[in-house]
Length: 310
Image (cartoon, rainbow, N blue to C red; front, side, top):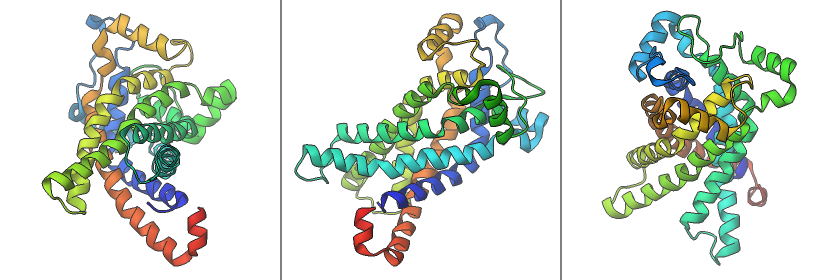
Protein backbone atom coordinates (compact mmCIF):
# COMPACT_ATOMS: atom_id res chain seq x y z
CA UNK A 1 0.00 0.00 0.00
CA UNK A 2 0.97 3.66 -0.40
CA UNK A 3 1.01 5.93 2.65
CA UNK A 4 -2.29 6.34 4.52
CA UNK A 5 -2.99 9.60 2.67
CA UNK A 6 -1.98 8.06 -0.65
CA UNK A 7 -4.20 5.03 -0.12
CA UNK A 8 -7.10 7.32 0.86
CA UNK A 9 -6.75 9.30 -2.40
CA UNK A 10 -6.26 6.16 -4.49
CA UNK A 11 -9.31 4.48 -2.96
CA UNK A 12 -11.50 7.52 -3.50
CA UNK A 13 -10.50 7.93 -7.15
CA UNK A 14 -11.05 4.23 -7.84
CA UNK A 15 -14.51 4.32 -6.23
CA UNK A 16 -15.62 7.35 -8.29
CA UNK A 17 -14.72 5.51 -11.48
CA UNK A 18 -16.74 2.52 -10.33
CA UNK A 19 -19.81 4.47 -9.24
CA UNK A 20 -20.12 6.16 -12.64
CA UNK A 21 -20.66 2.78 -14.27
CA UNK A 22 -22.90 1.24 -11.59
CA UNK A 23 -25.09 4.17 -10.41
CA UNK A 24 -28.12 3.20 -12.58
CA UNK A 25 -28.46 -0.16 -10.82
CA UNK A 26 -28.14 1.58 -7.45
CA UNK A 27 -31.13 3.77 -8.35
CA UNK A 28 -33.20 0.71 -9.30
CA UNK A 29 -32.12 -1.12 -6.13
CA UNK A 30 -33.27 1.71 -3.87
CA UNK A 31 -36.64 2.02 -5.59
CA UNK A 32 -37.23 -1.74 -5.38
CA UNK A 33 -36.36 -1.69 -1.67
CA UNK A 34 -38.92 1.05 -1.09
CA UNK A 35 -41.80 -0.15 -3.28
CA UNK A 36 -44.59 -1.70 -1.25
CA UNK A 37 -43.10 -0.31 1.97
CA UNK A 38 -45.13 -1.54 4.99
CA UNK A 39 -47.89 -2.91 2.71
CA UNK A 40 -49.17 -6.47 2.80
CA UNK A 41 -47.98 -8.76 0.01
CA UNK A 42 -51.20 -8.71 -2.01
CA UNK A 43 -51.34 -4.93 -2.01
CA UNK A 44 -47.75 -4.19 -2.98
CA UNK A 45 -47.15 -2.43 -6.33
CA UNK A 46 -44.47 -3.82 -8.66
CA UNK A 47 -43.46 -0.87 -10.78
CA UNK A 48 -39.82 -2.03 -10.85
CA UNK A 49 -39.42 -5.79 -11.41
CA UNK A 50 -35.67 -6.21 -11.76
CA UNK A 51 -32.43 -4.49 -12.78
CA UNK A 52 -33.05 -4.39 -16.54
CA UNK A 53 -36.78 -3.67 -16.27
CA UNK A 54 -36.13 -0.98 -13.66
CA UNK A 55 -33.51 0.79 -15.77
CA UNK A 56 -35.80 0.71 -18.83
CA UNK A 57 -38.80 2.10 -16.90
CA UNK A 58 -36.78 4.95 -15.41
CA UNK A 59 -35.01 5.89 -18.65
CA UNK A 60 -38.28 5.72 -20.61
CA UNK A 61 -40.14 7.99 -18.18
CA UNK A 62 -37.38 10.21 -16.77
CA UNK A 63 -34.53 9.98 -19.25
CA UNK A 64 -30.85 9.36 -18.50
CA UNK A 65 -30.96 12.19 -15.97
CA UNK A 66 -33.48 10.19 -13.92
CA UNK A 67 -31.30 7.09 -13.71
CA UNK A 68 -28.36 9.24 -12.59
CA UNK A 69 -30.18 11.18 -9.87
CA UNK A 70 -27.90 11.84 -6.91
CA UNK A 71 -24.65 11.10 -8.77
CA UNK A 72 -22.91 14.17 -7.30
CA UNK A 73 -23.64 13.10 -3.72
CA UNK A 74 -22.61 9.54 -4.67
CA UNK A 75 -19.18 10.75 -5.80
CA UNK A 76 -18.56 12.57 -2.53
CA UNK A 77 -19.80 9.64 -0.46
CA UNK A 78 -17.64 7.16 -2.35
CA UNK A 79 -14.58 9.37 -1.97
CA UNK A 80 -15.14 9.46 1.80
CA UNK A 81 -16.23 5.83 2.28
CA UNK A 82 -13.67 4.07 0.11
CA UNK A 83 -10.97 6.56 0.97
CA UNK A 84 -11.43 5.58 4.63
CA UNK A 85 -11.97 1.90 3.81
CA UNK A 86 -8.83 1.53 1.73
CA UNK A 87 -6.81 4.21 3.51
CA UNK A 88 -7.29 3.03 7.10
CA UNK A 89 -7.57 -0.73 6.56
CA UNK A 90 -3.84 -1.43 6.43
CA UNK A 91 -2.81 0.90 9.31
CA UNK A 92 -5.51 -0.60 11.57
CA UNK A 93 -4.58 -4.14 10.55
CA UNK A 94 -0.86 -3.59 11.11
CA UNK A 95 -1.42 -1.89 14.47
CA UNK A 96 -3.57 -4.72 15.83
CA UNK A 97 -1.39 -7.46 14.30
CA UNK A 98 1.82 -6.00 15.74
CA UNK A 99 0.23 -5.85 19.21
CA UNK A 100 -0.77 -9.54 19.03
CA UNK A 101 1.95 -11.15 16.92
CA UNK A 102 5.69 -10.53 16.73
CA UNK A 103 5.54 -10.02 12.96
CA UNK A 104 3.14 -7.30 11.76
CA UNK A 105 2.94 -8.95 8.31
CA UNK A 106 1.24 -12.02 9.83
CA UNK A 107 -2.18 -12.63 8.22
CA UNK A 108 -5.03 -13.27 10.68
CA UNK A 109 -8.60 -13.63 9.37
CA UNK A 110 -10.09 -12.24 12.60
CA UNK A 111 -7.81 -9.20 12.58
CA UNK A 112 -8.49 -8.63 8.88
CA UNK A 113 -12.26 -8.74 9.41
CA UNK A 114 -12.04 -6.32 12.35
CA UNK A 115 -9.81 -3.93 10.40
CA UNK A 116 -12.15 -4.05 7.40
CA UNK A 117 -15.24 -3.41 9.51
CA UNK A 118 -13.60 -0.59 11.48
CA UNK A 119 -12.35 1.26 8.41
CA UNK A 120 -15.75 0.89 6.72
CA UNK A 121 -17.67 2.10 9.77
CA UNK A 122 -15.46 5.21 9.95
CA UNK A 123 -16.19 5.97 6.32
CA UNK A 124 -19.94 5.33 6.66
CA UNK A 125 -20.26 7.66 9.64
CA UNK A 126 -18.30 10.42 7.93
CA UNK A 127 -20.19 10.15 4.64
CA UNK A 128 -23.69 9.44 6.00
CA UNK A 129 -25.25 12.86 5.17
CA UNK A 130 -24.28 12.46 1.51
CA UNK A 131 -25.73 8.94 1.33
CA UNK A 132 -28.92 10.22 2.98
CA UNK A 133 -29.39 12.91 0.33
CA UNK A 134 -28.38 10.51 -2.46
CA UNK A 135 -31.02 7.98 -1.36
CA UNK A 136 -33.76 10.61 -1.28
CA UNK A 137 -32.79 12.00 -4.67
CA UNK A 138 -32.76 8.52 -6.23
CA UNK A 139 -36.12 7.51 -4.73
CA UNK A 140 -37.89 10.60 -6.11
CA UNK A 141 -39.92 10.04 -9.27
CA UNK A 142 -42.76 12.15 -10.72
CA UNK A 143 -43.90 9.15 -12.81
CA UNK A 144 -43.54 6.02 -10.66
CA UNK A 145 -43.07 7.18 -7.03
CA UNK A 146 -42.17 4.75 -4.24
CA UNK A 147 -41.78 5.44 -0.54
CA UNK A 148 -41.67 8.94 0.89
CA UNK A 149 -40.99 11.51 -1.84
CA UNK A 150 -38.54 14.39 -1.40
CA UNK A 151 -38.55 17.10 -4.07
CA UNK A 152 -34.94 18.30 -3.84
CA UNK A 153 -33.43 20.23 -6.76
CA UNK A 154 -29.99 18.74 -6.10
CA UNK A 155 -27.75 17.52 -3.27
CA UNK A 156 -27.00 21.02 -2.00
CA UNK A 157 -30.69 21.92 -1.91
CA UNK A 158 -31.41 18.62 -0.13
CA UNK A 159 -28.79 19.32 2.53
CA UNK A 160 -30.19 22.83 2.99
CA UNK A 161 -33.78 21.66 3.35
CA UNK A 162 -32.90 18.89 5.79
CA UNK A 163 -30.75 21.17 7.94
CA UNK A 164 -33.39 23.91 7.88
CA UNK A 165 -36.17 21.53 8.91
CA UNK A 166 -34.39 19.12 11.26
CA UNK A 167 -30.99 20.58 12.06
CA UNK A 168 -27.74 18.60 12.12
CA UNK A 169 -29.58 15.64 13.66
CA UNK A 170 -31.64 15.29 10.50
CA UNK A 171 -28.51 14.99 8.36
CA UNK A 172 -27.44 12.00 10.43
CA UNK A 173 -30.79 10.23 10.39
CA UNK A 174 -30.17 6.51 9.86
CA UNK A 175 -26.44 6.71 10.54
CA UNK A 176 -26.68 3.68 12.85
CA UNK A 177 -28.14 1.55 10.05
CA UNK A 178 -25.46 2.85 7.67
CA UNK A 179 -22.68 1.86 10.06
CA UNK A 180 -24.14 -1.64 10.53
CA UNK A 181 -24.59 -2.08 6.77
CA UNK A 182 -21.11 -0.84 5.88
CA UNK A 183 -19.53 -2.69 8.78
CA UNK A 184 -21.02 -5.93 7.43
CA UNK A 185 -19.81 -5.22 3.90
CA UNK A 186 -16.39 -3.90 4.82
CA UNK A 187 -15.71 -6.75 7.23
CA UNK A 188 -15.79 -9.17 4.31
CA UNK A 189 -14.82 -7.07 1.25
CA UNK A 190 -11.09 -6.64 1.69
CA UNK A 191 -10.48 -9.88 3.67
CA UNK A 192 -12.28 -11.99 1.02
CA UNK A 193 -10.50 -10.09 -1.75
CA UNK A 194 -7.05 -10.75 -0.32
CA UNK A 195 -8.05 -14.31 0.70
CA UNK A 196 -9.23 -15.11 -2.84
CA UNK A 197 -6.13 -13.46 -4.27
CA UNK A 198 -3.77 -15.58 -2.15
CA UNK A 199 -5.65 -18.79 -2.95
CA UNK A 200 -5.70 -18.10 -6.70
CA UNK A 201 -1.96 -17.47 -6.66
CA UNK A 202 -1.25 -20.53 -4.53
CA UNK A 203 -3.58 -23.10 -6.10
CA UNK A 204 -4.02 -21.89 -9.68
CA UNK A 205 -0.62 -20.26 -10.11
CA UNK A 206 -2.08 -16.97 -11.30
CA UNK A 207 0.36 -14.10 -11.71
CA UNK A 208 -0.07 -10.55 -10.41
CA UNK A 209 -2.09 -8.59 -12.95
CA UNK A 210 -5.59 -7.59 -14.15
CA UNK A 211 -6.86 -11.20 -14.46
CA UNK A 212 -6.00 -11.94 -10.81
CA UNK A 213 -7.53 -8.65 -9.66
CA UNK A 214 -10.72 -9.36 -11.65
CA UNK A 215 -11.18 -12.89 -10.28
CA UNK A 216 -10.49 -11.81 -6.68
CA UNK A 217 -12.85 -8.83 -6.96
CA UNK A 218 -15.66 -11.01 -8.35
CA UNK A 219 -15.45 -13.40 -5.41
CA UNK A 220 -15.36 -10.51 -2.96
CA UNK A 221 -18.31 -8.71 -4.58
CA UNK A 222 -20.61 -11.73 -4.40
CA UNK A 223 -19.88 -12.35 -0.71
CA UNK A 224 -20.34 -8.64 0.09
CA UNK A 225 -23.77 -8.55 -1.58
CA UNK A 226 -25.05 -11.62 0.28
CA UNK A 227 -23.90 -10.30 3.65
CA UNK A 228 -24.77 -6.64 3.21
CA UNK A 229 -28.18 -6.62 1.51
CA UNK A 230 -30.53 -7.04 4.53
CA UNK A 231 -29.01 -4.11 6.49
CA UNK A 232 -28.82 -2.19 3.18
CA UNK A 233 -32.61 -2.48 2.79
CA UNK A 234 -33.13 -1.27 6.36
CA UNK A 235 -30.75 1.63 5.76
CA UNK A 236 -32.58 2.73 2.59
CA UNK A 237 -35.88 2.84 4.47
CA UNK A 238 -34.39 4.63 7.46
CA UNK A 239 -32.82 7.25 5.22
CA UNK A 240 -35.90 7.86 3.10
CA UNK A 241 -38.40 8.35 5.93
CA UNK A 242 -39.12 11.65 7.64
CA UNK A 243 -38.87 10.11 11.09
CA UNK A 244 -42.53 9.12 11.12
CA UNK A 245 -42.23 5.43 10.22
CA UNK A 246 -39.37 3.87 12.19
CA UNK A 247 -37.81 4.61 15.56
CA UNK A 248 -34.59 2.76 14.87
CA UNK A 249 -32.87 -0.14 13.10
CA UNK A 250 -34.63 -2.94 15.00
CA UNK A 251 -38.01 -1.22 14.79
CA UNK A 252 -37.61 -0.93 11.02
CA UNK A 253 -36.55 -4.58 10.73
CA UNK A 254 -39.47 -5.79 12.89
CA UNK A 255 -42.11 -3.74 11.04
CA UNK A 256 -40.77 -4.74 7.62
CA UNK A 257 -40.70 -8.47 8.36
CA UNK A 258 -44.05 -8.44 10.19
CA UNK A 259 -45.90 -6.58 7.44
CA UNK A 260 -44.17 -7.78 4.25
CA UNK A 261 -42.61 -11.10 5.23
CA UNK A 262 -39.02 -12.22 5.78
CA UNK A 263 -38.03 -11.99 2.12
CA UNK A 264 -38.82 -8.25 2.13
CA UNK A 265 -35.34 -7.55 3.48
CA UNK A 266 -34.01 -9.03 0.23
CA UNK A 267 -36.02 -6.73 -2.03
CA UNK A 268 -33.79 -5.33 -4.75
CA UNK A 269 -31.17 -8.08 -4.36
CA UNK A 270 -30.66 -8.62 -8.10
CA UNK A 271 -30.03 -4.95 -8.97
CA UNK A 272 -27.81 -4.80 -5.88
CA UNK A 273 -25.83 -7.76 -7.19
CA UNK A 274 -25.78 -6.19 -10.68
CA UNK A 275 -24.37 -3.05 -9.08
CA UNK A 276 -22.00 -4.42 -6.49
CA UNK A 277 -20.23 -7.01 -8.65
CA UNK A 278 -18.94 -4.53 -11.25
CA UNK A 279 -18.57 -1.87 -8.54
CA UNK A 280 -16.37 -4.10 -6.37
CA UNK A 281 -14.43 -5.33 -9.39
CA UNK A 282 -13.83 -1.78 -10.65
CA UNK A 283 -13.12 -0.32 -7.20
CA UNK A 284 -10.58 -2.94 -6.14
CA UNK A 285 -9.03 -3.37 -9.58
CA UNK A 286 -8.73 0.39 -10.09
CA UNK A 287 -7.48 0.76 -6.51
CA UNK A 288 -4.59 -1.59 -7.30
CA UNK A 289 -3.62 0.60 -10.27
CA UNK A 290 -4.19 3.99 -8.60
CA UNK A 291 -2.31 2.76 -5.53
CA UNK A 292 0.69 1.92 -7.73
CA UNK A 293 0.53 5.39 -9.30
CA UNK A 294 0.34 6.99 -5.85
CA UNK A 295 3.40 5.02 -4.70
CA UNK A 296 5.36 6.19 -7.77
CA UNK A 297 4.26 9.76 -7.13
CA UNK A 298 5.19 9.59 -3.44
CA UNK A 299 8.57 8.05 -4.23
CA UNK A 300 9.33 11.06 -6.40
CA UNK A 301 8.09 13.85 -4.13
CA UNK A 302 8.38 12.54 -0.55
CA UNK A 303 11.68 11.93 1.28
CA UNK A 304 11.99 8.45 2.81
CA UNK A 305 11.77 9.69 6.38
CA UNK A 306 8.51 11.57 5.68
CA UNK A 307 6.89 8.56 3.98
CA UNK A 308 7.60 6.40 7.00
CA UNK A 309 5.72 8.85 9.22
CA UNK A 310 2.64 9.35 7.03
